[in-house]
Amino acid sequence: VETITTADRMTALVSDWRRGGLSIGFVPTMGALHRGHMSLVDISTGRADRTVVSIFVNPTQFSEGEDLDRYPVTLDEDGARLREAGVDALFLPGREEVYPGGFSTRVEVDGLTEGLCGAFRPGHFDGVTTVCAVLFGIVRPDFAVFGRKDAQQLAVVRRMVRDLRLGIGIVEGGIVRESDGLAMSSRNRYLSPLQREEAAGIYQGLLRVRRAFEEGVRGAGELEEAFRSETGTRPGLRVQYANLVDPDTMEGLGYAGDGSLFAVAVFSGDTRLIDNILLEKRSGSVEV
Ligand code: PAF
Image (cartoon, rainbow, N blue to C red; front, side, top):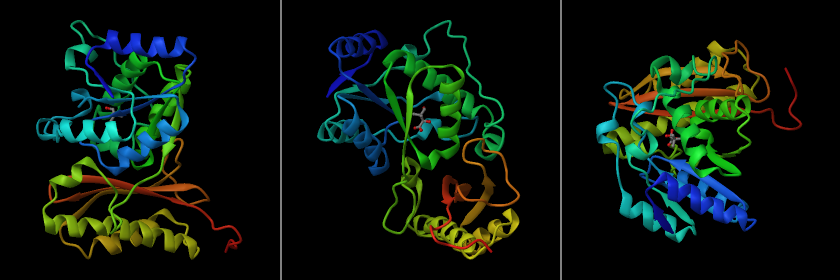
């Protein structure tokens, strides 16, 4: 894996590959890589001739008082994992490469960014879409891979790519979980052993929601109740939101239909964790 720190070199390398007729997959990350990230990398290496992974802790997507200053950095381990996974280039730009002096553009997607995380993290998605637009411009991949754990981010980036006609495929990777169901996240390492144990309740809550849906419960309020009835048994968990939404528009829904998304943000101690579950009718099940 070649480590590249400048935008010019990154663009030049990808242009060479493209001239050689090779396809390019891209996985943007903020590092502290775990199995969830690596599953996205595997999707890219499985589909593209060349895979680029970026590691850049993007300051513009953190709000005041969030964890920018203590966001985990594990570059040696990350590099080793990427090498083993057969990644071709690691793009590791400094702040000045992504946001050079005079940088004055902000990419903002309306509507989809208002609810869920957008309601509690002002400016977060503007930071995400702006950095993704810059990174897409540097790497110019055929497709980029995003995880479904960050379902709102996935929908927002998809919309940006569509609206701006960037011509980049957005490929979705499923949620990878620990053995007790906790969704993999770089932020899980902030959890104390007790918080870590309690955090498994988030997935238990989502499973309750799915079970309720499968039993015919459709109302958003009842589904939220099902979630809270599980997390409420763990005193260290505090639900920030638990909402039923349309997975493409992120609009809140009063009633669940086939393919609705139930998305949550829950604090375990000071650590904010997000997760979600798609509600799908089992084939052969009967509407009641
Ligand atoms: O999901 C992330 O790690 C980040 O939001 C991303 C997409 C790399 C943009 O900084």
